[in-house]
Image 1 (cartoon, one colour):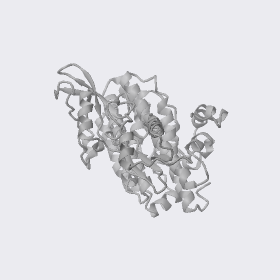
Image 2 (cartoon, chains in turn orange, brown):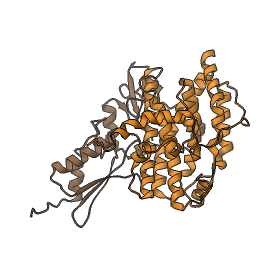
Image 3 (spheres, one colour):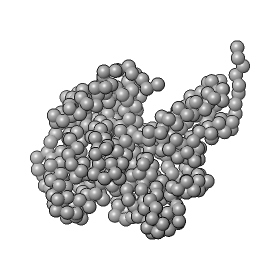
Image 4 (cartoon, helix red, strand yellow):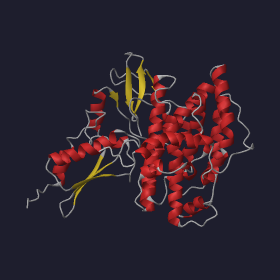
Length: 260
Length: 169
C-alpha cells in the first residue's frame, strides 16, 4: 500500500528507519528466546549477547525515527503499540527460532547482509544516523564472525549437524529474496545521500554466502527458486502475530507503567 | 532565593571521575571513554555527554543514573545528562592507565584497533591474545562472547586459567 502512495521525504525517512529497526527488533526478540536454552553455556551467553545488541540497535533506530517523525512518540511506541500489519520486518526474521542450526544459518544470512549494507550506510550524509550505523557495524562484525565459524563447524561436523544446517539453509532460502527488496522509499533515501544501493553489493554478498557454504561442505540452494514477497508492506507469516502477542501484552496491559 | 553555586568544567570532570563502571568497578567512566564531554552554559546549566560502549549495554541506564546522582550529591541542581551517539565508541578511547588496570584486574586489555579494510579476509584468521595472568601466548579463544557484551572468553594453556579479553572495537 505504501508503495502506491507518494511519500514525503520525512515519511520516507521514518519508514526507512522503521524497516531497519523492525528487522533488528524482531530478530533480536527471536534470539532472546535462546536465553537459558543454549546448547552450551558459552553459546547461551553469545546468543543472548547478540540478541541484546540487536535490540539495542532497534532501540536507537526507533528513537531516531520518533525524533524525525516529531509526533511525540518514543521507541516503546513503535515496539509495543503497533500491530503485525504495521511491522515492516522481513519474514525471514520472524520465523520461529528452530534448532541451533536454524538460528545460526539465519544469523549468518542476516549478519553478512547487514555487514555489506552498513559498510555503505555508515557514510550517510546524516551524521547522527551515520554515527549510529558505525556503532552497529562494529558489533555486526563480531556477529558475522560468530555465525560464520558455526556454519563451518556444523557443516563440516558430524552427519547430524551437517543435515541440520543444510536443512536450515534449504528452508530459509525462499525468504532471502526480500533482502534485496527496493521501492520508492529506498530510492528517495539513496537520492538524499542517506540510503544504500542494495544491488551494489548483491553479488559480493552472494559470493560470501556461497564461499562459506562450500567451505562448510554444504550445497548452495538454488537462488532462482520461488521467493516470498510482501514483508515491507506489512505482509507476514502467521508467526509474527504470536510473537507480538507475547512481546507486547505486558506493556499494553500497563501502558503507563514506568521503571522510575 | 538561594544563590547558585558556580562550578568550573574541571570540577565537574573531577566529580564524574568518582563514577565507576558497574561491570568493571576498577575503572571510572572517564578512563573507559564513556564520559565524552562537559559543558556549562551561560545560565550555569551543566551538560554532561556520555556514550554507550555497546548498543545494548544494560549498564548504560545505570551509568546515566549514577552520573545524575553524583551531580545531585555535589549539590548541582541545573544539569542534563545526554546520550551522545555522534561518534561510535571505540576501545582506543580507553587510556593506557585504564588498560593497565584492566590487566591487573585479570582482564586481557584491548589492543589498538587497526583499520580492517580486509575484514572479510580476516574472517578465517584467529587473533592471539596474551594471558593477563602469566603473559603466555599459548591461549585459545573459547567464545566470542563473554559475561558482558564487551568481553570474549579465552583459556590459557600455560597456566590453565580461563580469562576474559576486552574486545577491541
